[in-house]
Length: 125
Image 1: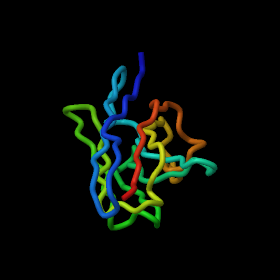
Image 2: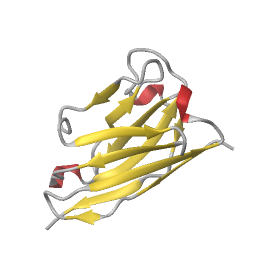
Image 3: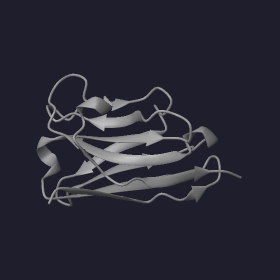
Image 4: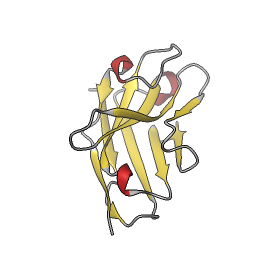
């Protein structure tokens, strides 16, 4: 059974850091696009950061560039999102997703097939 399980969400003060993890089972991450998405209350889900299935290229939303880093550990079949210098506007439910998609638009929600249950990130003083 194909499954993605996120962990690492927590409450943190502005300026703090968190590392989110997404463990995959039932398939390997080597050959899929993998991404982190987030959804804040009253807002649409948006792509935060993704890794292409083709050449491992990465995408970051402008709002997180320079602060967030996506990485993949194939041996552990796990993808991470290191989040530094967190801001209140980063607060959201963060979702991990995987896609068989191999095209250019590898961080668009519509191209993703499998989703985790989400993990809550709260940024507040």
